[in-house]
Length: 135
Image (cartoon, rainbow, N blue to C red; front, side, top):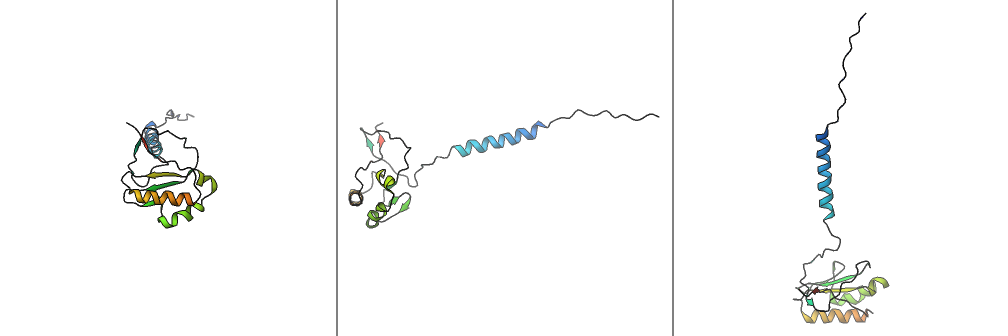
């Protein structure tokens, strides 16, 4: 009795679908890593300074921004000048000591002085300001 013997094809891996999947993953990782954590919510034109120094960004600091239309934001939340002192007092001690001011150069000088007075009344002793280095 003769049995029919079939020749088996060698197993093959389809590479085309693997390449498609790897390309999609590569695009995903490239796009997702381009987002930065500390992007400002408001576009601010910072003034230039000859004595500006770079500070390490390791500390979790509170950020107070004043936009060109005199809008004040504490950590991205809009706040009135009158409520600023109480809001800063409610911050934790580490965040209060590392509070930084980021004011647009077109912001009115009177608002910036009111903000600095409120911060001084809230107990902020050292207030660094963000600037651009001289070009």
